[in-house]
Every structure is written in C-alpha cells, then in structure tokens.
Length: 260
Image (tube, rainbow, N blue to C red; front, side):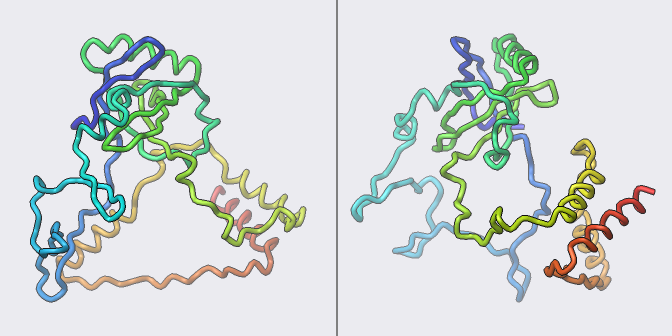
C-alpha cells in the first residue's frame, strides 16, 4: 500500500508521527467504455474549450473565478490557508462512537506509526480501547479540510474515519414523509416488533459478500464462450399496503419455517 498523507496526530502535547493509507478498495469490475460500432476504447481528454486542443497534465492549474477573472492557485497557497492542519491532525475532543450519527461517517483509513512514533501510537491505541472512546480532529488533505474520528480497529490498529460536516447533509423537508400523527395500529406495531426480534442477531461482517460482481463475472465468462444469457423475470413488489397484518404474519411464518 502507498501512503496518501504524512503528518502527525496531536494528542495533548504528544505528537505521534503517522502515515495514512486507504483502508478500502473498490469491489466493482473494471469495465471499459467502448464504441458500440467497433468496440474501440473511449478515451477521456482534457481539452481547452477555446482552442479545442488537448492540454497536458503539467500545464493544468487550478483557479477560482472572481468577477469574470480567474485567480490561479499554487501549491503553497493551499498550504498557507492552514499550514498546521496540513501536517497535524489535532484531536480536540474525545467522544463515544455511538454518540455520532452514522450518516456522518464517510471513508475509513488505516494509520501507521512512523519511526520513533511507535510508543506514543500504542499508548493512544490502548487508551482508546480502555476508555471505549474515539478522538475528533480535523486536518487538510488534497486541498480540503477533513473532519475525522480516530478510533481503534480490530483492537490492533488506529483507524481514521473521514466524516461529513453537518452542512453537507441535505435537507429532507421537501420529501413526502409520513407524520408521527399517522401512527400504525397497535396490533400491526406489535407484529412488526416480533418480526424485527425474530431476525435480530449479532452483526458479523463476514456474513455479507458482494455477490453481484461474482454473478456478473460469471455472465461475462458465459458470453465469452458464446453462450446466451437468460434473464429471469422479476415481479415488482406491490407497493399497496392493503393488509399489513396479513403480510406481517406471512413474514413471521416464513421466518419460522426457515429457522425450522
């Protein structure tokens, strides 16, 4: 793995030199865009909208438009905006992870201690495990200030979870959501609770795998052999909840049969 950020965690007066690594990778198949006529690759080009000519990467700069004029930004301009946050993730508070709405969580990263940072890294890891807390801080990466939670992962490593700022969450006020006044019937609610309890068990991530890509790859191999792919007809579920009680009872019965 290649480090995508070098710096330090600021933990009180303790600085822990670390490197950041991406903790995830895409599980989707690498599909190419092709011309339907001859199956040649479609290439994306960086084109000057005025001249129509392609522009090399080394000639591309970033700019911000003010009053019909672009202000070009250099690398040092981004660093000058918040120099300390370009090198240090300062933990400003500690929280229980359960107190953070999961909708705010985004991308996970692994943290690795740099040379001479092992002891302080291990100290923070063990202290967070003991207190069952995580540290909130912010830093600058790829020209953006990132809000982050630093927490133990698998009891062996520090993980940084990139978080969304509250203002990045869109409002749902314009959506047609049922009001609390439209309460379900007591009997329906009781059956729904029973259904939830019947399906409740400890979460095991290893129980879940991406089966779509596996099946798609199987179809690709079939087509490569000249075989025709048969598409199974799927009936759209009925959106009308004409008899919730009957559907809930049928769901419970189905669960009992599967368990038996």
